Length: 517
Image 1 (cartoon, rainbow, N blue to C red):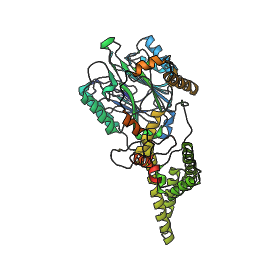
Image 2 (cartoon, rainbow, N blue to C red; image 1 turned 135 degrees about the horizontal axis):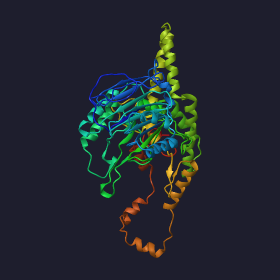
Image 3 (cartoon, rainbow, N blue to C red; image 1 turned 90 degrees about the horizontal axis):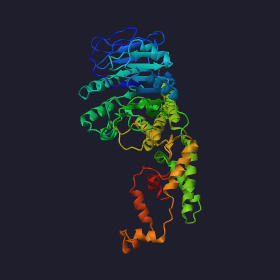
Image 4 (spheres, rainbow, N blue to C red; image 1 turned 60 degrees about the vertical axis):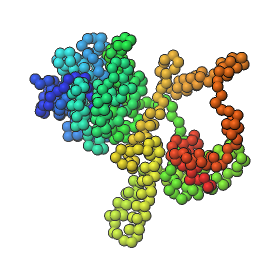
């Protein structure tokens, strides 16, 4: 986990130092490293252009199996905690969200306030970087022994490239889950700003390039979009999305059910961000329905299943009879897939283990034949797995190659999160997150927009006389003619084969390949 603060000035490059507290040297760089309780979590500090703290447990290094202990992370640019009222705001924020880790920016505190943060908000494992007058100040508070990276960047547009360079230096080795949450003091696109002058295109491009170079993607959010508000009225009001969370593909795979919330304003011009790695029950969950998999077509039995199911169905010529035939095919394919194919990932692992044993055995004719057979089966399963995740990723492009199951898996996870309904706002502005309330809000909304106000015939005639017809009698005659099989076939074969399927689970590819049946 990386906490980011891009709100203070540039810090020059300095060497590695160790100490018992965090602070600044004469060159205004963050250099100190080591906790007030070294046995709990010794700290090694790498100080680059903008300062970095890297915390690891002694003798353990990075143990990602422990990461799920970080249940919730709160990131907040507090804009000063020097008065009792601000501290009460912080305590209220912590009481409402109950985070495991709290990252505070711009605390404007120094000296004795270190222990004040540590004990008054109830986090025994805390470290603090003193502010320089009324500029800066960081606090990292936690109630568990975890691994944390913390980055302290700078906000000036002309020097912000140092922050992005530092972010690139922090990029971990492939396979390591990496997430950054905090105040980046930058936006990715113009739609993340309301009011004021336009942002420089170069600054947004550099921010996006840094994301791409580090393999980071935006985590999305729930709540209001803009996280910063200058608090002014009318035309002088400016709002921007300066705070965000980003992560690499490995992190998405490690925490597929995360939830990032933009909280309310708590005595600061920045919203707090709450990242929950194990959110509670989701708003609405549906049972898994049927979806035809393109990879099934690689198995000859699939065509036999479809032909047998379709021919055994009794058709009456009605639409309901046709839908009944499709449902019969779907049920047969679902049973066949479960019995023969099972879990693709488990089958792939099983075949690879079998191959490893065969390669270690004496290479007799029977062994070589088995190896060839298993390799052929493995190749087929790998293609099916890639197609499975490609379909769920709903994307046809891939940066750096055309076959990458991990990429499509991450895209599918992101789509699932984006389509998940965790809550809705009702007509009174109240946030609803239970299944019952979400159902009620949905029904109320659609009932209201589709309710007929029962206009009189005179009122309807007055309206229709103002509408100019666009379809003449000849066009209407052609449109009213019954559909023919050739027209339906032409339409189906012009569709994208694996685009969004119908509610019955079949997309155009199924009809294109099984039209002869």
